[in-house]
Image 1: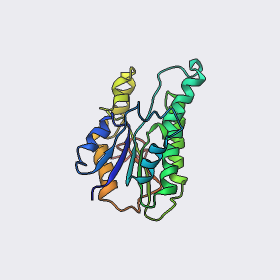
Image 2: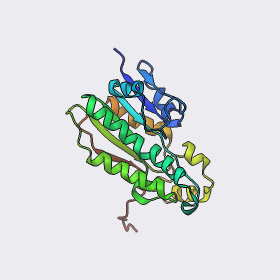
Image 3: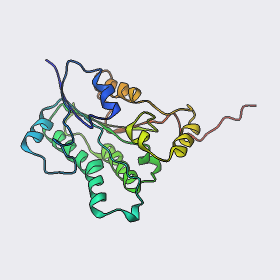
Image 4: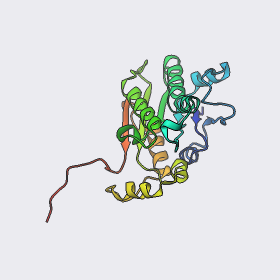
Length: 219
């Protein structure tokens, strides 16, 4: 029998790459119109889906280029709902009602080092902390966050206007490159299907060793 998977953020390149690998599974990948993550009043049908799926992949995210002091309260609250509160609410519904659910959330290196978008950075930090601290309700459950560095073909990266900062971030990386969406999709697939579910309540940093500091003084 095929599994049921819920993917929020279906238009991301990561979701598209992951979807190529799961042809037999029944996938719920609702549009933004059907599942507006700004609205936290989930319908009964939404809640029923969250309770019934085997796996949940949460990729929704908004990054703002606006100056924090010039942003409206509505704009900030919308971002908080999408980047944090909706994710936690989906997780709580699933973890309290589904004994076997596996959940993977896309975090960000901004949750470690901060971001030019203060709200975005703080929300990613909060998501990382939630994943590390939220004890699973049943032994078969799994809750993991993947925290990548620059996703070079990610829509948020491609939309950024500060191209010089992106190039700088790549140049200081020991790998001398960013990460591709298909690489993250591969990791998600292996976590869901090939690796032990003992890997839980952890943030997996996928940054090419960007934040390593110890150097070898080889002549």
